[in-house]
Length: 129
Image 1 (cartoon, rainbow, N blue to C red):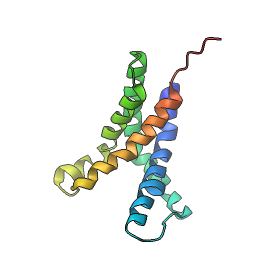
Image 2 (image 1 turned 180 degrees about the horizontal axis):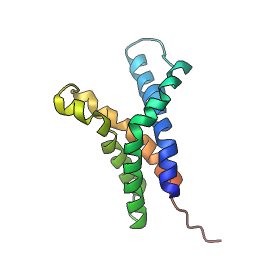
Image 3 (image 1 turned 120 degrees about the vertical axis):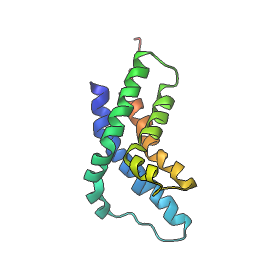
Image 4 (image 1 turned 180 degrees about the vertical axis):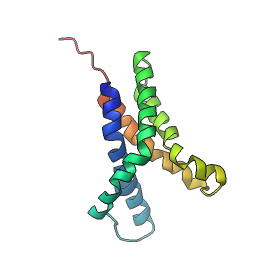
């Protein structure tokens, strides 16, 4: 249950940070414009929760299954699951052909980074003293 709480609480704001204060800044600087970091973007945080809560729970489910099976490289596999599941909010637009192009693949990073961080935080540590 702790794992699902970690993913549900931390995944959406981490995805928001990666998208708006990470990838958007890199793109803006690559185009030669000034930085667009502003606190007015925090207004979009509830929308981030609405859009990424289902991918977060699905990624937590994958992480729980991998942890139960004691799979090697669990964090990496969970990051891949987050990469795949973050496309769910865009599925209808992608199927209609409204969203396309090679840069769409970069959108998965918005799900992979929070998934890896949440998986690492929710992981079990067996420390012998």
